[in-house]
Image (cartoon, helix red, strand yellow):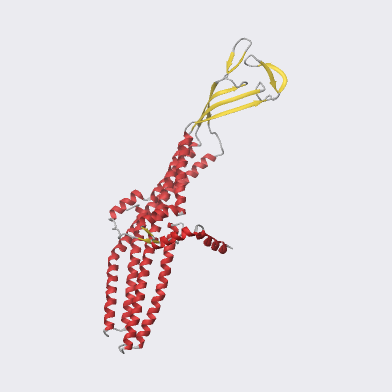
Length: 451
């Protein structure tokens, strides 16, 4: 069922607006989109779900900080209510000197009707409030660091896939050239056999090599297509979108001292560990604050009367009460005994704080080791790039000279086959070396930031 649904989706996908999309696809095939590494990173940041989740978590944590800050400030609200209670048949003189019916429910006001319209301001002063804000600050910093970790990890992933796809394309070109060389060598051995200058065994060997090069070319085509699709998943809504890659020249490697300074300043793992420790310290502060007194302040201004009016009714004495007014209250909350629950919460927060301190120390040690390993790997890969270029050029020249020697009858067929194999190996090794260097440099960038 799933396979059928997927097939239906793939069939329906290009059918919507088929004529327009066909023309667009034809245009893209004729002029594929040119993607640089920076463009690939930008597109991946828009499409990769894990990075989107990390970015959403960071934005949510920033809002949590705003919420925690609002908890420290006074809150204002408006309250309005109207109450009617059935009279019990008796009347009494109210506090305003006016006789009115008594309500049946004694819990209600002294009159059947009561109206409230009030503005209320509340404020609570405690040691837990600033601790909550401090925790929210640390959580926001930690979420921001985690977003940066996700971004740098995505950059490293895209860089590796970008240069792997580029290397696969270059290996495909090498495989095509090797197949043409093998086909040409087969023709050469056939001609020499016809001229009785070579044995039939040379032709057979050349044919076997050509057949192997055909299989290698098919494998290279498959590998290149897989690499393009894997990268296309991160870049486009349809991974099959035609595109071409444009790479810049290999960038230089900074000095190790510059790398160490950048890592000490910009490493997100270290920032996340520091923020986690700060959050655990805020939890300790909040746990202690729960054991200390808190003060609640309240200011109420408005009406709570039997008439919805600023002034009450006129009394027999000719006086009129004023209904609009205010009231204030101060509440002191002093914890006395909760069966040691607060003390245990303090101990819990202290245990988590100590664990966060150990994690920070471990992160610092791990940073030193990872930085040294990543820099050594990048330096070794960089130093080998020139050697790999020279090896590829030497192998190509060796193949040319060996072919000439074979044409002159001075070399054997095995020497030519070995030269062809050495050429393909050297070319593939050069592409792998470029991927290795760029991947190592991207891994170093995840520790140090943009270099």
